Image 1 (cartoon, one colour):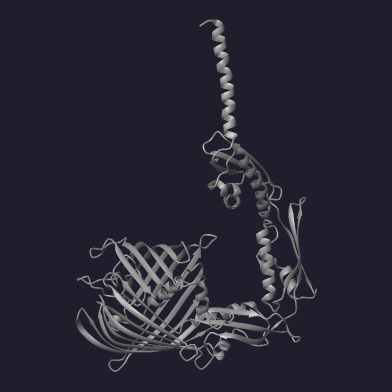
Image 2: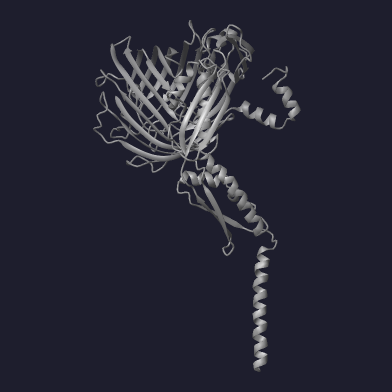
Amino acid sequence: MSKKQHFIFLLFCGVLGVFGSAFAEQSLLAPRHYISYKTFIYGADDIALRKVLRSASKLVAGQGTPPRTINELKELAVQDMKHLQTVLADQGYYDAEMDFFVEIATVPVTVYLKINLGKLYTLGAFKIKSDPSDNPQIPLIAENISRVGIHMGMPAQKDKIKAAIDKTIRFLKDRGQPLAKVKEDRMVIDRATKEMHVALLLDTGPLVRFGNIVIENSGGVKAEFIQSKLAWKKGDIYNREKIIETIQTLHNSRLFKTIKITNGVTVSPEGFMDIYVNLVGSLPSDYSIGGDYQPKKLLTNSVQWEGRNLMERGEIINLGADVGPTQKTGEVSILLPDFQTTNLDLVTNVKTGKWEWPAYTKQGIEMKSFVQYPVFGPQLVGTGGLSFEINNVAKNGKNENIYRIIGLPLGMKYSDVIGGLQPRKGTRISAMIHPYLAVFGRMQGYVKTELKPEIFLPVTPEENVVVTAKGIFGFMPGAGKGVVPIHKLYYPGGVETIRGYKFQMAGPLDQSNNPIGGRSIALLSLGVNNYLTDNLTLSGYMDWGTAYNRQYPDFSSGMLWGIGAGIKYHSGYGEFSLNIASPVLRRTMDSSVEFYISYNVKPYEVYRGLYKSLTPPAIQANIDNPNGQRS
C-alpha cells in the first residue's frame, strides 16, 4: 500500500470513529423502549430521614416503570428535587439544597441525588390565644406545651406541629368544649434565628354539658341497659374520653356489631348538647366447632354455643362440650350484667365430666359463681365469689379420693392493652387469692395465690413487631405436705405454660416418669410477635419454668427451657394456630420437637361469607338493611 493510500485509509477510519461515537451517543439519547435506572440519595446521614426521602421520592417510586429517554429521566429528577425540597422543609430543613447527576455509563443508569441539608430549624415559639379570650383552659396548655406532645427547641417538623394542634383541640373537647376549632393558625419561618414560630387563634365555643340521650337504634337491647353503660350522667361537663370509655364498655358486652355515639349539632341556651346512640346488634346466637391437640393431652374436639340478649337485658349464655381420648366434659356459663346495681356482673359456671390426664384422673362436678365490677374505671376489674366441687380423683388409677371443696375466689385484673387479638402495646396483670376448705370429712384448708403479669412493647413505629413478656408465679401459703389435693397442684408443660414439653410434663417426675406436681410454680416467657397482616401473626418465643414441692418457689431445682415459633390466623370465620417448639434442656422422656395445634371455626359465619360473596350487591343491600334504617 502506497503512502497516499495508507493516508486515505487512516483518514477513513478516523472519520468512521467520529461518526460511530456520535451515532452511539445519539442512539443512547434517542427514544428507546425504556431506560432502566436506579436511584442513589446521599447527603442525609440520619437513617430515619433517608427512609422518609426514599419513600417520598418519585424517582424511587418510578424505578418499576422507567422512562423511554435520558431526557425524560432528567426531567423526572428535576421534578423529584422540587418535591423532596418540600419533604425536607416538612422535616425542618428549610435551607436544604439539592442537585442531581445521571451516570449513563452504568448498567442500569444511575441517578445520584445530592442533598446539602443545611441547619435544622427548631421550634422557637408556640403561642395560643382564644376567642373569647377568657377561656381558663388556654393557659394550662400555653404554660406547659408538653401536654400536647411538643417542647421548645425540638425539630420544627410540620407533622408533629400539626399533631400538637390537633391535641390542643382534643384537650379542649375533653374538658367541656366539643365545638372547639382552629380559627387561625400561622407558622412563620425565621431564617435569621433558624426557628419556626407558631401562633394559634382558637374558637373554643361554649362550655357544654351532656344533655339528653337519643337512642336511634338500640341494637335489640332495652334502653335501661344502654343507660347503665354510659360513663356520664346528664348535666356532667362534656368529656370526649367519656364517650370513648362508653364505646369500649358497650364493645366488651359482645352484644353489638356496630357502635356509633355522636354529638348533636346544636347547644341549648342552658349549655346542653344531646348525644345520639346508634347500635347494630350482633347475631342473637352463634356457635363454633374446634379442636386442640398437644402431646399427652391428645386431640380434644369442642362444640360451643353462645346465646346473647335472649331477654333483652344483655345476658350471655354459653354451652360447650369437649370430647377426646383424655377429656369428656360439658359446661354451662351464664353472665347477667348489671346484677342488682349498675356495672356489677354476675357470672355462674358449671362444669362436669371426666378428665384423664397424665398427672391424675378426675371425675365430678365443679361450680363457681362470682361477681365482677370495674374499680376506678373499666381498666381495673375486681372479682369475688364462691366455688364448690365434688370430684373423685385418682393417681395412676390408684388411691381414689372423693374431694368436697369450698372455695372463695378473690381477684383483680388490670388491662390497658391496645390491639385486641393482636396486642400492640400495654400491660395486663391478674392477681388471684383463692382460699380452699375441704368439707364433709377431715377439715383441711389452704390458700392458692397466683400473679400473672403480661407486657407488650412495640419496637417499630408501625407497631407491627411487638416484644412480649409474661410470667406465672403461684404459691400456696399454709399448705403442708399432703394437704393439697393432687388435682390442685401445679403441673407445668404444654402450650399454656412451657412449650417444647408435653402437657403436664415440665415439672418434677417420679421414677416412672409420671408428673408429681408442685405447690408452687415460676414461669417466664419472652417472645416476638410479627403482625404480617390484620389476620396473620408470626411469633417466636422462649419459655422457662418448673414447679416446686414447697409452699413458695425456692429455685432449688433448675428451670426447664423450651424454644419455638408459631403462626396464628384469625378472622370473623374462626382461628387457627400452630406452634412448633423444642426442649433446650432435654430429658430422656422428652421428644426433640413437639407440635401444638388448635382451631376454631364458626360455620354460620363461613356460610354467610360465602352467601354474600355470591349475592349481587343490590340484593345484599336489602338483606343488610331491610327497613332502610340509618346505620
